[in-house]
Amino acid sequence: MRLADLSGFAFDLDGCVWTGAVLLPGASEFLTALRRRGKRVVFLSNNSRELPASVAGKLNSLGVEAGPREVLTALDLLGGEITRRFGRTEVLVLGVEEMAQALRAHGHRVVPLERWREARVVAVGNDPAFDYAKLKAVSQAVAAGARFVTVNLDPRLPLENGAFDPGAGALAEAVAVASGVHPLVVGKPRPLIFKTALERLGCRPREAAMIGDSLRSDIRGGRAAGMITVWVAPRGAKTERGIRPHLRVTSLTELLTLFERDVSGR
Image 1 (cartoon, one colour):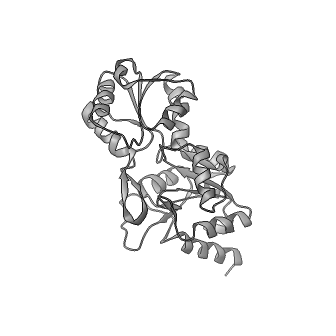
Image 2 (cartoon, rainbow, N blue to C red):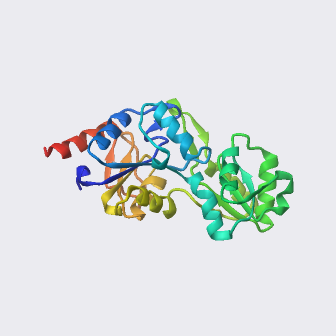
Image 3 (cartoon, rainbow, N blue to C red):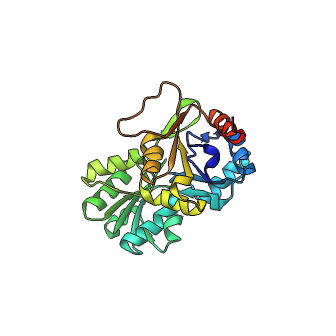
Protein backbone atom coordinates (compact mmCIF):
# COMPACT_ATOMS: atom_id res chain seq x y z
CA MET A 1 0.00 0.00 0.00
CA ARG A 2 1.44 3.36 -1.11
CA LEU A 3 -0.05 6.49 0.42
CA ALA A 4 0.65 8.41 -2.78
CA ASP A 5 -1.63 6.03 -4.72
CA LEU A 6 -4.69 6.85 -2.62
CA SER A 7 -7.23 9.39 -3.87
CA GLY A 8 -8.98 10.42 -0.65
CA PHE A 9 -8.01 11.03 2.96
CA ALA A 10 -10.46 11.15 5.89
CA PHE A 11 -9.12 12.70 9.09
CA ASP A 12 -10.42 12.36 12.61
CA LEU A 13 -10.09 15.70 14.42
CA ASP A 14 -9.93 15.38 18.23
CA GLY A 15 -6.64 13.79 19.17
CA CYS A 16 -5.47 13.52 15.55
CA VAL A 17 -5.53 16.98 13.92
CA TRP A 18 -5.96 18.95 17.14
CA THR A 19 -6.40 18.67 20.90
CA GLY A 20 -8.73 21.33 22.24
CA ALA A 21 -7.67 24.55 20.51
CA VAL A 22 -4.12 23.41 19.69
CA LEU A 23 -3.15 22.09 16.25
CA LEU A 24 -1.03 18.94 16.50
CA PRO A 25 2.45 18.68 14.91
CA GLY A 26 2.46 17.94 11.18
CA ALA A 27 -1.27 18.51 10.65
CA SER A 28 -1.03 21.70 8.61
CA GLU A 29 2.00 20.53 6.63
CA PHE A 30 0.52 17.13 5.75
CA LEU A 31 -2.83 18.57 4.68
CA THR A 32 -1.08 21.19 2.55
CA ALA A 33 1.00 18.45 0.89
CA LEU A 34 -2.12 16.41 0.13
CA ARG A 35 -3.93 19.33 -1.47
CA ARG A 36 -0.83 20.23 -3.48
CA ARG A 37 -0.92 16.72 -4.96
CA GLY A 38 -4.62 16.97 -5.79
CA LYS A 39 -5.79 14.58 -3.09
CA ARG A 40 -9.33 14.95 -1.75
CA VAL A 41 -9.78 15.55 1.98
CA VAL A 42 -12.66 15.23 4.43
CA PHE A 43 -12.66 15.81 8.18
CA LEU A 44 -14.66 13.18 10.03
CA SER A 45 -15.71 13.91 13.59
CA ASN A 46 -17.93 12.36 16.24
CA ASN A 47 -18.51 15.92 17.50
CA SER A 48 -21.91 16.35 19.13
CA ARG A 49 -21.51 20.05 20.01
CA GLU A 50 -20.77 21.71 16.66
CA LEU A 51 -22.09 21.70 13.11
CA PRO A 52 -19.79 21.60 10.03
CA ALA A 53 -19.63 25.37 9.44
CA SER A 54 -18.40 25.95 13.00
CA VAL A 55 -15.80 23.16 12.77
CA ALA A 56 -14.58 24.45 9.39
CA GLY A 57 -14.24 27.92 10.91
CA LYS A 58 -12.09 26.56 13.72
CA LEU A 59 -9.85 24.70 11.24
CA ASN A 60 -9.37 27.84 9.16
CA SER A 61 -8.61 29.91 12.27
CA LEU A 62 -5.82 27.42 13.07
CA GLY A 63 -4.37 27.74 9.57
CA VAL A 64 -5.90 24.60 8.04
CA GLU A 65 -7.88 25.11 4.83
CA ALA A 66 -11.38 23.58 5.08
CA GLY A 67 -14.83 24.24 3.68
CA PRO A 68 -18.10 23.17 5.38
CA ARG A 69 -18.65 20.43 2.75
CA GLU A 70 -15.28 18.95 3.75
CA VAL A 71 -16.42 18.58 7.36
CA LEU A 72 -18.69 15.71 8.34
CA THR A 73 -19.89 15.55 11.94
CA ALA A 74 -21.99 12.84 13.53
CA LEU A 75 -24.23 15.63 14.86
CA ASP A 76 -24.96 16.69 11.27
CA LEU A 77 -26.18 13.15 10.48
CA LEU A 78 -28.35 12.78 13.59
CA GLY A 79 -31.57 14.39 12.38
CA GLY A 80 -31.57 12.56 9.07
CA GLU A 81 -30.94 9.19 10.69
CA ILE A 82 -33.81 9.70 13.16
CA THR A 83 -36.09 10.62 10.24
CA ARG A 84 -35.01 7.56 8.26
CA ARG A 85 -35.70 5.20 11.15
CA PHE A 86 -38.63 6.81 12.98
CA GLY A 87 -39.96 9.61 10.78
CA ARG A 88 -40.30 13.22 11.88
CA THR A 89 -41.08 13.01 15.55
CA GLU A 90 -40.87 14.43 19.08
CA VAL A 91 -37.32 14.34 20.45
CA LEU A 92 -36.02 14.89 23.97
CA VAL A 93 -32.47 16.24 23.77
CA LEU A 94 -29.59 15.69 26.17
CA GLY A 95 -27.02 17.99 24.60
CA VAL A 96 -26.21 21.54 23.55
CA GLU A 97 -28.43 24.01 21.67
CA GLU A 98 -26.66 23.21 18.38
CA MET A 99 -27.97 19.67 18.72
CA ALA A 100 -31.53 20.93 19.07
CA GLN A 101 -31.01 23.18 16.02
CA ALA A 102 -29.77 20.24 13.96
CA LEU A 103 -32.90 18.25 14.86
CA ARG A 104 -35.28 21.13 14.13
CA ALA A 105 -33.61 21.57 10.73
CA HIS A 106 -34.84 18.04 9.86
CA GLY A 107 -38.39 18.77 10.95
CA HIS A 108 -38.31 17.22 14.42
CA ARG A 109 -40.01 18.83 17.42
CA VAL A 110 -37.75 19.23 20.43
CA VAL A 111 -39.74 18.67 23.63
CA PRO A 112 -38.88 20.41 26.94
CA LEU A 113 -37.30 18.38 29.72
CA GLU A 114 -40.36 18.62 31.98
CA ARG A 115 -42.56 17.16 29.19
CA TRP A 116 -40.44 14.05 28.73
CA ARG A 117 -43.55 11.86 28.48
CA GLU A 118 -44.22 13.36 25.02
CA ALA A 119 -40.86 12.18 23.64
CA ARG A 120 -40.84 9.43 21.04
CA VAL A 121 -37.04 9.58 20.71
CA VAL A 122 -34.30 10.51 23.18
CA ALA A 123 -31.14 11.91 21.56
CA VAL A 124 -27.95 12.03 23.64
CA GLY A 125 -24.82 14.05 22.91
CA ASN A 126 -22.18 15.86 24.91
CA ASP A 127 -23.77 18.18 27.47
CA PRO A 128 -21.55 20.40 29.69
CA ALA A 129 -24.68 21.26 31.73
CA PHE A 130 -25.51 17.61 32.44
CA ASP A 131 -27.09 17.06 35.87
CA TYR A 132 -29.25 14.62 37.83
CA ALA A 133 -32.52 16.19 36.69
CA LYS A 134 -31.60 15.66 33.04
CA LEU A 135 -30.48 12.10 33.68
CA LYS A 136 -33.76 11.36 35.44
CA ALA A 137 -35.93 12.81 32.66
CA VAL A 138 -34.21 11.15 29.70
CA SER A 139 -33.86 7.81 31.51
CA GLN A 140 -37.55 7.79 32.38
CA ALA A 141 -38.45 8.63 28.77
CA VAL A 142 -36.35 5.73 27.46
CA ALA A 143 -37.67 3.33 30.09
CA ALA A 144 -41.21 4.37 29.11
CA GLY A 145 -40.58 3.36 25.49
CA ALA A 146 -38.91 6.29 23.71
CA ARG A 147 -36.27 5.20 21.19
CA PHE A 148 -32.73 5.85 22.46
CA VAL A 149 -30.20 7.38 20.03
CA THR A 150 -26.73 8.71 20.78
CA VAL A 151 -24.39 10.72 18.56
CA ASN A 152 -21.43 8.60 19.66
CA LEU A 153 -20.07 6.33 22.40
CA ASP A 154 -16.75 8.14 22.90
CA PRO A 155 -16.00 8.11 26.64
CA ARG A 156 -13.67 11.14 26.50
CA LEU A 157 -13.15 14.37 24.55
CA PRO A 158 -9.36 15.08 24.44
CA LEU A 159 -8.17 18.54 25.49
CA GLU A 160 -4.78 20.24 25.71
CA ASN A 161 -1.94 18.84 27.85
CA GLY A 162 -3.54 15.45 28.40
CA ALA A 163 -6.74 16.79 29.97
CA PHE A 164 -10.17 15.65 28.82
CA ASP A 165 -13.89 16.29 29.12
CA PRO A 166 -16.26 13.36 29.66
CA GLY A 167 -17.61 12.44 26.23
CA ALA A 168 -21.11 11.77 24.93
CA GLY A 169 -20.47 8.06 25.51
CA ALA A 170 -20.12 8.63 29.24
CA LEU A 171 -23.54 10.29 29.34
CA ALA A 172 -25.10 7.65 27.09
CA GLU A 173 -23.75 4.93 29.38
CA ALA A 174 -25.40 6.60 32.38
CA VAL A 175 -28.73 6.69 30.55
CA ALA A 176 -28.32 3.07 29.42
CA VAL A 177 -27.65 1.88 32.98
CA ALA A 178 -30.56 3.85 34.45
CA SER A 179 -33.07 2.92 31.73
CA GLY A 180 -31.90 -0.62 31.00
CA VAL A 181 -31.81 0.10 27.24
CA HIS A 182 -28.81 0.25 24.89
CA PRO A 183 -28.68 3.09 22.33
CA LEU A 184 -28.59 3.24 18.56
CA VAL A 185 -25.28 4.92 17.60
CA VAL A 186 -25.03 7.38 14.68
CA GLY A 187 -21.31 8.24 14.61
CA LYS A 188 -18.07 6.26 14.38
CA PRO A 189 -17.58 3.30 14.31
CA ARG A 190 -21.03 2.76 12.76
CA PRO A 191 -21.14 2.55 8.93
CA LEU A 192 -23.24 5.66 8.09
CA ILE A 193 -20.57 8.30 8.68
CA PHE A 194 -17.91 6.35 6.74
CA LYS A 195 -20.28 5.73 3.82
CA THR A 196 -21.10 9.45 3.70
CA ALA A 197 -17.41 10.35 3.89
CA LEU A 198 -16.62 8.11 0.91
CA GLU A 199 -19.43 9.75 -1.05
CA ARG A 200 -17.93 13.17 -0.28
CA LEU A 201 -14.47 11.97 -1.30
CA GLY A 202 -15.86 10.48 -4.50
CA CYS A 203 -13.76 7.33 -4.36
CA ARG A 204 -13.99 3.64 -3.57
CA PRO A 205 -13.11 2.40 -0.06
CA ARG A 206 -9.72 0.93 -1.07
CA GLU A 207 -8.77 4.26 -2.62
CA ALA A 208 -9.26 6.13 0.67
CA ALA A 209 -7.49 6.30 4.02
CA MET A 210 -9.09 6.75 7.44
CA ILE A 211 -6.60 8.48 9.75
CA GLY A 212 -7.30 8.72 13.46
CA ASP A 213 -6.16 8.13 17.02
CA SER A 214 -8.99 5.87 18.21
CA LEU A 215 -8.75 2.16 17.56
CA ARG A 216 -12.37 1.56 18.56
CA SER A 217 -13.97 4.29 16.44
CA ASP A 218 -11.59 5.39 13.65
CA ILE A 219 -9.72 2.17 12.92
CA ARG A 220 -12.49 -0.34 13.58
CA GLY A 221 -15.01 1.72 11.60
CA GLY A 222 -12.60 2.46 8.77
CA ARG A 223 -11.65 -1.18 8.35
CA ALA A 224 -15.29 -2.27 8.39
CA ALA A 225 -15.94 0.27 5.61
CA GLY A 226 -13.11 -1.25 3.54
CA MET A 227 -10.80 1.76 3.87
CA ILE A 228 -7.04 1.81 4.45
CA THR A 229 -6.56 2.69 8.13
CA VAL A 230 -3.78 4.72 9.74
CA TRP A 231 -3.52 4.76 13.53
CA VAL A 232 -1.88 7.86 15.01
CA ALA A 233 -0.68 6.78 18.44
CA PRO A 234 2.24 7.51 20.76
CA ARG A 235 5.02 4.99 21.16
CA GLY A 236 4.05 2.36 23.68
CA ALA A 237 0.31 2.60 23.04
CA LYS A 238 -1.15 -0.89 22.98
CA THR A 239 -3.31 -2.31 20.22
CA GLU A 240 -6.56 -4.08 21.02
CA ARG A 241 -7.39 -7.62 20.10
CA GLY A 242 -9.24 -7.83 16.80
CA ILE A 243 -8.51 -4.22 15.75
CA ARG A 244 -5.47 -4.02 13.47
CA PRO A 245 -4.59 -0.84 11.55
CA HIS A 246 -2.90 -1.09 8.15
CA LEU A 247 -0.31 1.47 9.24
CA ARG A 248 0.78 2.94 12.58
CA VAL A 249 2.55 6.29 13.04
CA THR A 250 3.37 8.44 16.06
CA SER A 251 2.30 11.73 14.44
CA LEU A 252 1.12 13.36 11.24
CA THR A 253 4.71 14.58 10.84
CA GLU A 254 5.81 10.96 10.48
CA LEU A 255 2.93 10.29 8.09
CA LEU A 256 3.98 13.28 5.97
CA THR A 257 7.50 11.84 5.71
CA LEU A 258 6.09 8.50 4.50
CA PHE A 259 3.82 10.24 2.00
CA GLU A 260 6.67 12.34 0.56
CA ARG A 261 8.84 9.23 0.32
CA ASP A 262 6.11 7.51 -1.71
CA VAL A 263 5.69 10.56 -3.93
CA SER A 264 9.41 10.76 -4.67
CA GLY A 265 9.63 6.99 -5.26
CA ARG A 266 12.45 6.52 -2.80
